[in-house]
Image (tube, rainbow, N blue to C red; front, side, top):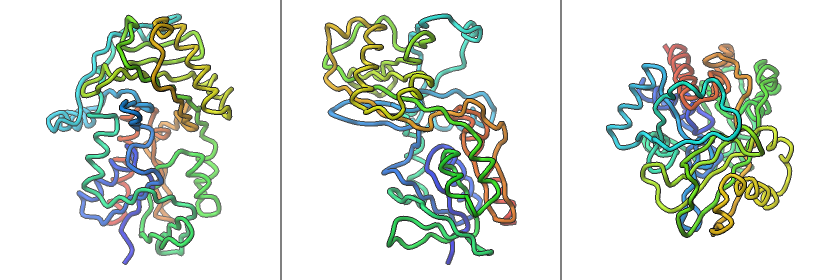
Length: 327
């Protein structure tokens, strides 16, 4: 028997949608190419250090998301983060206003998503490679030899370029999705055996190769002296295909210019990770995209805004559409 819905992607959009669909009584399966949930809200553990090397924190602006956050707080899945923040370069005008409460998941940025995934039928390490719609249901084909997943409806939450590749020749949405640009981001991970005197917990950098620096261990429930630095979108694009080791050395030099103490306390761990599709500079500002004749919905932060809240909102909107089709 086919599932009611197959969700491709176990990030914020996919798991928010799957949770609502299951709550509505639908039979839902989630397939995800990675080894676990999170998408770009990933936490890497390496050599005794933990790094939130993707999404750094989130805020709650809408009443619906704020209510969800309060529930996660009660469950011990989310806590406030109040870092001492510095700004390098010209401070944007928006920076003069009081920021919304910064929130982080526990014990890593994928904490909420791991919790949600635990109540769902999730198949990790399962890469969707080809989609076929036979007129009545979807056949999601994975690696050679894997039995296809069958579902009456499909929700696709991969980055736009990957979603478009899967949908070419299957849905007219492919061309529109492919036109959504995504900026890359190189992430630098630094682990230290002793505290690093930086004078701040996090910093926005508006004048150099970096855009963001953060002491990961200043967040609640994080141990060890672990730092993250994100390169700017332009620098990341200029060095997109450079070897990770070369990128790590270049970004360490940029980090050292902001935190000179690194010269006295060299990192015990130095690594770089490339996010090829980090954020959408021009999101569609639509909750989700719909192809009703194919029982297909496409969602993601690039639809409803770049924030984690936008991804969650997009997933919930997609779930509402899919639930209505079932009725």
